[in-house]
Length: 296
Image 1 (tube, rainbow, N blue to C red):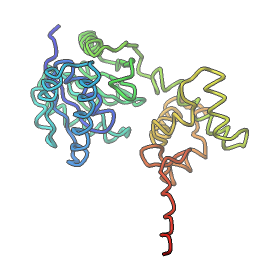
Image 2: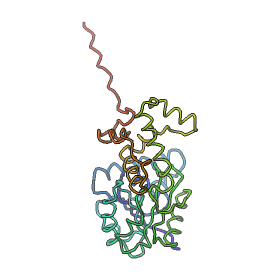
Image 3: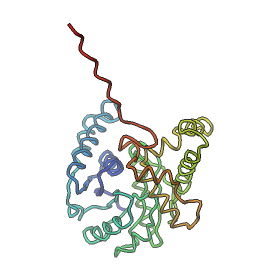
Image 4: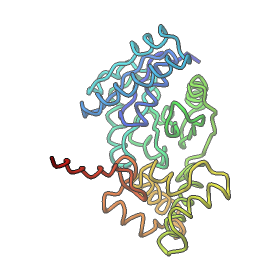
């Protein structure tokens, strides 16, 4: 099995930029792709800042940090990915958009390239079906934030080959991750269990069982979770949580996966969590009142 030397990452949000950072730190040439130049600029700045933080903490030498940043290329053009050994899709969690992207990537990527998706819930088999290489399509679900979280879920589609699985698993382990393997069912392992819990927390709040603070405190102290489910939902993004619940509800056909009306309402209102400054909780800083000037 050949060692991967080059990687493409499509989508420069928190997940995509984190995956790109993992690649360059572990000696891989990375092309980070996004159609939004402002998003690319933010991602490049974030990666550079994170690398410098690793250097300042003594976790990476100055030379290694500089070398890592030299392996990162940011561009708007998918065509740059023609020589990548693996391309990891990390765009928004919408199946139609992912299928369209996989169709394009299949035409651009070299014949031996693996096409991976960072999807947290969408069928790998359906994504693979739009390509001419279903044996080389796989799910590679990083946890958020990718440089810190230790787990990667690897999801085999109906036709994913052993060679593709072994190469993807080896890459995740090269990144220092622990790998768990899931079959291609809605939500895979982590979100099949996590999202219904978050959804139930919204139902608990919606029906007035307890306040948001008591729900989160109860779960943190009662089950030893580092974050309460509502706090975690804000961190993930309420729109992402809702999208995954819809995938679970549709894919598994059970009413127990129906999204909470309160979750739906918050997303409709634009209360998406930390990234918007408001979700279940308020994160925007309230400006301090201007003190009147003393009268002379």
